[in-house]
Image (cartoon, rainbow, N blue to C red; front, side):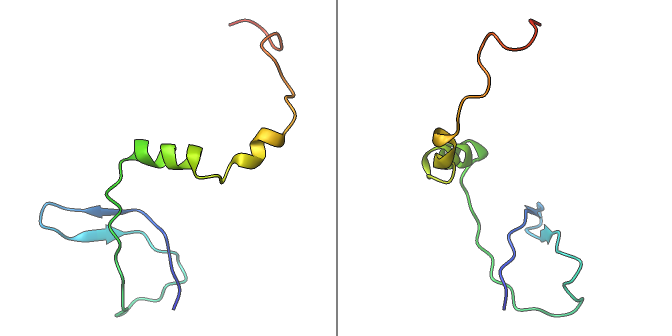
Length: 71
């Protein structure tokens, strides 16, 4: 058994379509579906507050507002 995270689309007739990796063989498979009803804005908030990017706070600032050319 393996877990695959991918995006899916549910049509008006309630059919689910997903893209799978090429190494998944055609045929019958047991599938578990988790519907994440959070909005993309919610996902951005999770990314900002979830801690996965906390290491960026320790990175040195390489550039400042005076670097580069004005646009």
